[in-house]
Image (cartoon, rainbow, N blue to C red; front, top):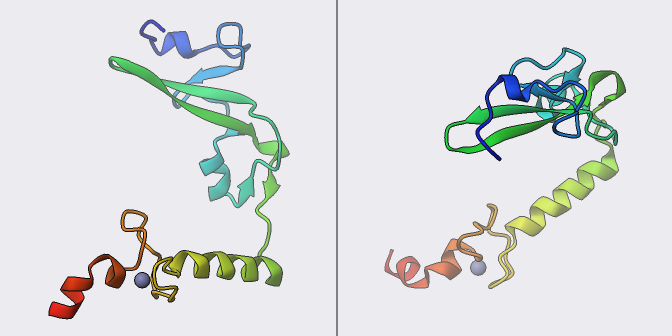
Length: 127
Ligand SMILES: [Zn+2]
């Protein structure tokens, strides 16, 4: 794609991009990104992407953000006991060291893949 200007990004009917497109900061108020919805306690709620915003960048592909219709957004689902339990289980699994099988008390760092004690046994003994 050749370098876009801000004006190129104004395509509210989607003739150029196939989806309604607005330049960064110029999207209509009734559309919002996922993050903007979240700030208002909303989520897209299964609706399709309604539009996109493009932010041209020097010598790189433009930044893209997808927009959703605020009027179709749904409130963030409240936490139920079952959802809390599922979350606790998922977190517990992330703290369990696959090497020694113990609950490390913290989330196993993906870079190590095991708890710190298993990753650096020599240092632990020396300390
Ligand atoms: Zn371990």
